[in-house]
Length: 152
Image (cartoon, rainbow, N blue to C red; front, side, top):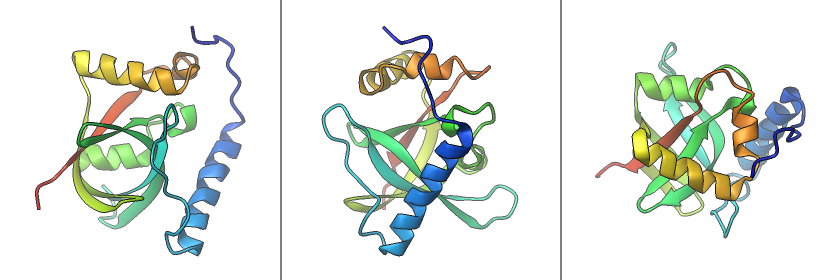
């Protein structure tokens, strides 16, 4: 059962941690910063979208797990109220690229719906027992985002 008072560090700290993570990735030329999911832990990938306003590439690091050929993440923005910019970019243009420890891939992003969302949310709950408590901090539903491989 989820802890209704699950602790989270302040939002500025969460944002700083991800910024440092991106910095490590850049500083090492991608040798550090990407990781595969292992057991009941999520992995980390680099997502590159096209900015909906600028048309410029925007890259972020996100946690994920694999579901068959797909990669699954959540549009949670450090559990802050606003939707993450990368998710807004993907809603405007779902074609993007991801880079995992296994290399880059072209993907199409979409939000999980219905029973698929329930199933994928449950899997996240197995990875993070506090998921429901964290999600309750947001007024709206947190999107479960699926990255589907694009054919070459």
